[in-house]
Image (cartoon, rainbow, N blue to C red; front, side, top):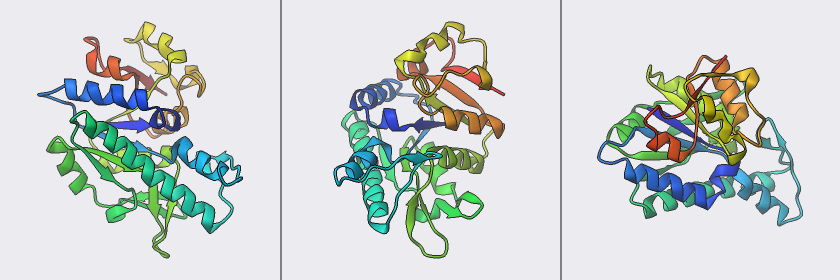
Length: 235
């Protein structure tokens, strides 16, 4: 099972999403079992900026200043989810929209992101569905929803799925393609290039620190290589 980490750069790139969708479709009749997780993306930042609100990210989350801004980010994240799903289904990928606060999948607590029951998610994947999950979490007391960082969501979900063969997949931009020159040799966390090459670098580091398996890849390499699906990252 693979958890695809759709970072802010890639979730906002329609060409990347189309390429990914075509590769998934081309992997039939035996497609890999995939879940995807994404955050608010650049769309949320643009939505805020369109109203003259310029907010930076702190630990992967937009530093919002009001309930109104929180609502803007929430709406943009849900819309981003639907755009990803629409792009995948246009290429006949059986994508399923899953908002992170649905069924208490992601719950935000003082100790971080907790994950609820995942049995239904496993069933969906085993039946060749492709869940596309937003990093929106429900607050256990208020019942309200808020954005959590992509790194928190991915690492928490991977831990809750608790599968020996589960791997987190992070996608590399063109600046990082030289990483595959030594594809058969795992790369250490300390040797990773910066976020310009690996936009989800923070997620990769956190996952490896938790002892989770991580691959760096591209859609073409993941689905089309005869020598593995990506380059492993180790501590």
